[in-house]
Length: 307
Image (cartoon, rainbow, N blue to C red):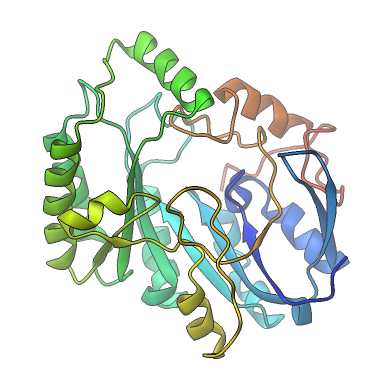
């Protein structure tokens, strides 16, 4: 285990705030956790001691369990940055994501407690389908932007990438709902992005694109989800060395360690790249040992999603 200070991502691979907050705090008390590299299987031990953590970057569609313990996290001296995905997609595309009227107040509270500059609203991925046209997205985006204005200073978008798992899961959703998926049209994507950028700007938010530099032509800034400048500002260290470490083409992130695991998220979103299928995520969630030092689908555990 390295003793160097690191940014800890929690997590791109599963929804730790929604489903594993108790596991996370148990690992903080222990001072470490393990994770398995999904591209080779090597195990890594990571220090979670305050002196070894630059900051946590949390990703979630449901922050209620973590919000209840945010004071506890802050008292220990950790600093945190938040990515909150709120799209309001219909079921079953987001099968177990709580409704907008419960999610929106959570982002508002995060903005109040953590600072609007430390909370990102993610409206991604954008899925274009018969039932979710560009005009549908614009209406939804404007309504959400109105509700979230003042609670965040930036919004991140991306158009869905058809990874093998994502394509299969969305095809299943399309067959189930009868809503045909529409192939991305670059000109239409630029037009939609430009209109979203204008809607965001009118509410004092800056639109950013995640891993899609082509959207700069429509006014979207390049996204840095694990943002070196934002982390330096958060921790008050303007010269902190945070080297770039892109996770895929056109990614703007700096180096971090992700402590999550694929196939463990129970939210059942069909547009997700992290589960082989919604059912695989639910099965993995049931098999996670909440007292183990690694988040992995190895034994039976319970649920925190009722909060």
